[in-house]
Amino acid sequence: MKNILSTKKLNPDQRELFSQQGLCLVDYNAIAIVFLNFKAPKPINNAIFTSQQSVHSFLAKTQGDLGLKNCFCVGNKTKTLLEKNGLNVIEIGQNAAELAQKILKNHKNKVFYYFCGTIRREELPNALKSEKMTLFEVKTYKTVLKTKKFDQKWDGILFFSPSGVASYISENKHQTNTYAFCIGQTTASSARKHFKRVVVANTNTIESVLEKTIEVI
Image (cartoon, rainbow, N blue to C red):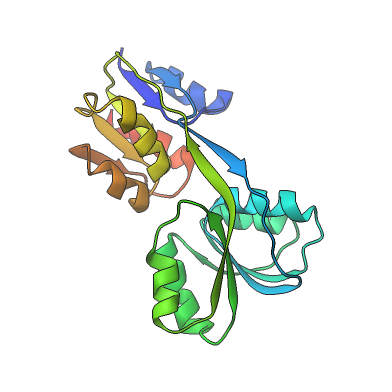
């Protein structure tokens, strides 16, 4: 039986996918999200969210008193979360770089508030600032690494964020001779620094990572 490690806890239905294929799954949360106490003006015409975590932290802080007109986001699940809470999504990108290009093409003269974590990539803010756009960054959450050492060898490891890769590697540098299955190109870029065999899911969803793992393994 092949052994799979997920750096994110999966729900029963997701775990069942592996069980049906005769795969042994171990899952744990390699990171934890801590919401920060932040300040933001009201109303806001244009807000950028590049993760579901930033949406959750924003909603927890505002408690429904949003004063937010338009949203720009990364990923279909982030879009769904925003719309579920009554927010209007104007643009969506599959990654931050793609979203930045759409903003530059269609919304160049607007002022944006970027709600993000304390650890965030540079592509989007650098792209907008290079074109002299007005962008205010608001740190809404921080990512805490929950490191754990494993002695067991894995036939595949599932990663859902660059922070998840960093958390795993911090205690398991010797355990990289395996497949790294990644939710997107950003996570894959981090994984390639440590793993020779990196596979990227077809879409940026947990289910797609699971399907790709079963397909390859």
